Image: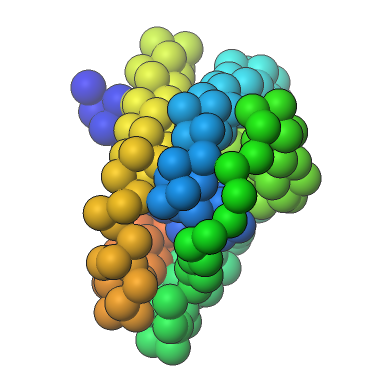
Length: 206
């Protein structure tokens, strides 16, 4: 259960960070534009990438000390920078979501293609799901990896489902800069904690 919670926490802190994908999901949810397909595509992309990171890259890392330590350090440094970015955003950000209301409903196939593009053409998605999540999972046993992956996917599913279908209730709240500041501050603190764990693991392994 510990690893499930850790997976949920890790995945959740990475996913909720303000970015193009979340802004897109929010906007489609507000407009009720094929939101089922938007949520499904985002989640399935996470399933593919997280499985690759946890069960594919993570396994290779576990059996290679150099790769294990290297990816742990890269992931730790990335999380450290991510944490600083979140804290800086918490101190200076205003609302990062630009929602316009009058957009036309677009066909399902175009919605799917647009969602795939916004998700898969963003390099951060690979850092988050394959490098960071895969790097953390690389320090775990096989059973722990499975539980970690389950937790990570639960967080992804709940987030995208809530974000897409709860957009009409969330938008008024997150139009207020203070809401994003609180969220960014929490994300920053959690990123520092995860970064510390990864770097500590790398130092112990060396």
